[in-house]
Length: 508
Picture (cartoon, rainbow, N blue to C red):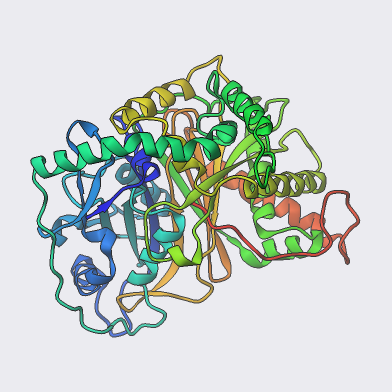
């Protein structure tokens, strides 16, 4: 058995009848393998069954502690039903991208069954180009962006030859009784004060750097008081903590209570073009991605007469997973809060401000404990975590309160070479994430070969057509390409670095 961390548990607690806690990846594949076998549910079931020993998250089933006295546990499931988890369906004619996106939106709008391992795979036929889509849906309590990519790397191969070493026999764990889980819960209850004492010195001074709660009344006051106390207490290395950012999200249509239903749009952009912009202006690939999103949102909101005078604010998830934690799954993630200068009309100056803002956000992040999000949760007893998450969610959608952010923007590095599912070549790998109360739009980007795959997810009641947002993002890229083409050497623009870097942060 493996106990969930407080951060893993938070992704379970955040779910309600309107908010889902899973993430997904949409792959587009050839309809047949190199050997001519059709890519269907039977092939995917056989592939997963052969590699199940490498996929612990596909075997884990949730064991709750009675009365939520402590965080739940993962149990290696012995009643695994592969036919339940891998499903097959087909689009009606003509089977275009919009129809596929609508089907994906319906699937991600349904929560995963907590009585079973928290994942599903959908094999979707009927695409108009004869290809097949495969949607892999996994709960965020089990994987973050990096560990989710690790799962996909186990399912996918670097060549059309899909066979690997035969699976060793697996021994499933017996599912614990309620009495056993009650005993574990009582033991955990006694450890709760120790968790609080351990987390206090590192978490309290930084509470206003926890993006999900920093906008709540009283949080900044507690953090400032904790910093004042820490200054007054001598310590061997009395480095003062970095105060939280004063970034506040202006009100847009996305800062509202979400419905249970979603809309999705997806598409590819040239990674070569993004790298050309990066090299021209001496910034990072991630800076360019954030600039594309900022430009697109600026144009989309302005066209509807809804562009705030103040800059938007964005959540940018980042991995804090160490090399030693590779393959451990679960969540090792933090979130940066950064300004999106949508008040700036000039694309080059906008990119310069983004580069400065991202650099400042990274510097703040490096000064914070890597376990801050997890430590902050330790101040809430496990029995109250779900109620606290629901209360925070309600506050995030209320008018009159400062909001944490306007949009979630994630950039996940992916493979640069083609991959295969059971011998069928993959042509695109699109991330599909979720939205929250108060943040009704999510833009997630994943690189694959020479492309950046954009997945836009919005609340269905807030946006009628997410494809117009995708069009605005494309226009933002085209705008930057045009400006980059006018320069033969890196321009001397204040705020942009002249030494380009290709380092990218993985996200959730």
